[in-house]
Image (cartoon, rainbow, N blue to C red; front, side, top):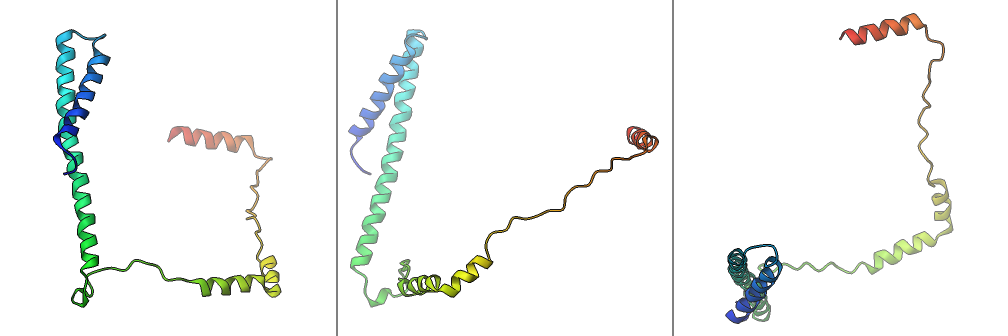
Length: 141
């Protein structure tokens, strides 16, 4: 764990005092003291958990640092190299291809053109008797 129990006590005491100050105006004195005590206990325990997680993470960092320093040929295949290779040559080739005047003609041909969907067609001359019949059939269902 990182730090000492003094950190837990300070954080929990601040939480208890803050809870006491905010609830003294709205609650009875005994209720205020009880809620402040609960706040103290909860934050005291949570601070232990937080310190444990930080200590665990720091322990992993130290362990990883020691593995890298002590690595020999016997440890081949136990470490993963996640560094991406340099792709400067491929990038330069792409930039040169973009500067080519023939490429500009191809780019003009493939410019953006919006989608042209078919227009909706409405029927203006409908028979009123057919409309009334369709409405009756729909209302029956």
